[in-house]
Length: 197
Image (cartoon, rainbow, N blue to C red; front, side, top):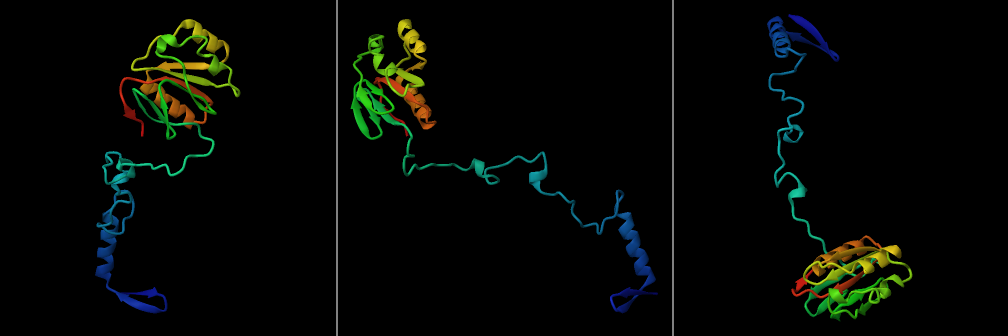
């Protein structure tokens, strides 16, 4: 028997118990000392293991996210909400037929089809101040080839041109407008209707 000091009092410890405890203590770990055989490894979290795959309940990235725009940001450009064979819904304004969406206004555009897009019909876009960076042309239900003279004129004026079918042109215009780019659009209604929300 030994007297072991613990604070102020001495405790009597059986020699056999000390020997068994020391053997247990030293025998359990080959890499160092471990306090008990039931001590779990330091990193048991499944998230810290490379083999663990995240599931729907593990992370919010698997949750559906919805966004409701309560108020339009000040200074953001016009947004095209829907289009139909008759025209467009731009920021709640119904526009019938082909239209020109410019930074300060929405105007009727006097073209009937992509064949009517000429140097004269483009004068509206390159005379604007401040000068537009990108002009998005929606040519109806399909992407059509525009007269090379028209494209050369706009390039000489420093305006980048995107020619697309009208559904994609509306989406491109909305994207560029949301990035606060100085963008304009010349749109010819497509033969189908869709809402862009």
